[in-house]
Image (tube, rainbow, N blue to C red; front, side, top):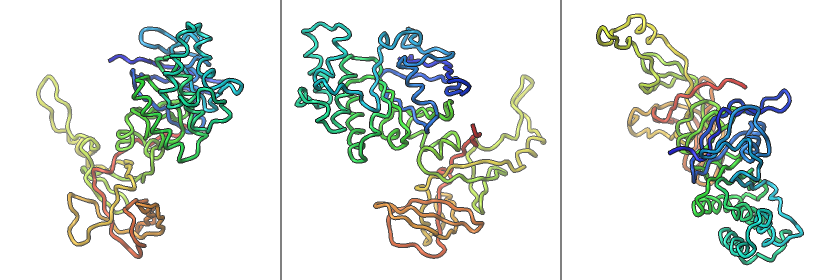
Length: 376
């Protein structure tokens, strides 16, 4: 299936500062894509380019078979919900939503029906004649969504629209926003710096780092198999294990586990026209030499070892001292100090205080090799 929105090698800078460095990304119809990144990564600039508030220095933006980066904002099938909501304080909720339809010269008899449909979508029908100043933050957010949806855009852009809400209301609005997106079937492109929000809402996450795409994947994939050390650290918490690989086994801080086959260099030459692959002594020597690697191990993948039995399923067992234990409700976050002084974090089901040297373990499958991220 071809992408609804196609961003092709887009470059954007301000003065001498490069903000976006060759962004290429396709977004499907009906997809909820989150552009995630820290402050200054270029995520809002990318959103503004799609909306038409900025023009790229080079590259193209297409919607289906139409190039849109050269079109004025009002000629694109795109609407934006801003962080501030930008509601007109002197107009009622109904008139705020109807405003865009009047600007587009929508037939007068059609406007009330369209506004009522939009209000019903966001469960704000009872507030049609209310002033925005009398609404809560969550209600104002719903009105801003209705005002954007009433124009029936193909793509809805959301620039950190939940950031001004308190924690409980923010979680509630996350659920409502995802349900609304599924109901209306419109492509949502959501900008946030909040990793948990991105994980909760998205079909895919596009992680930006200093103007480049670090990784684009589903929340589960980007969390379970991060491509780089930066991704592993930005999406959730992780332990980065600096290891050496020799003869198919990884070693770090006295722990040893079998590395996945894809992490071990082959020891033979590829097949040629003259015959099958042949053994290469030099390659075997190189394969037997240690190579450096970095692994990501999530805290929840480290467990208290069952000392009543041998390590099961090739589990990697190690001893550590708990130097800090933080209660987190259903789980405890532990800071573990290994014999060489290295520290790891583990998240285990809540229990009483753990004292003294303790045995822990993890599965080799949970140690994911990642590419070391170069500083930008």
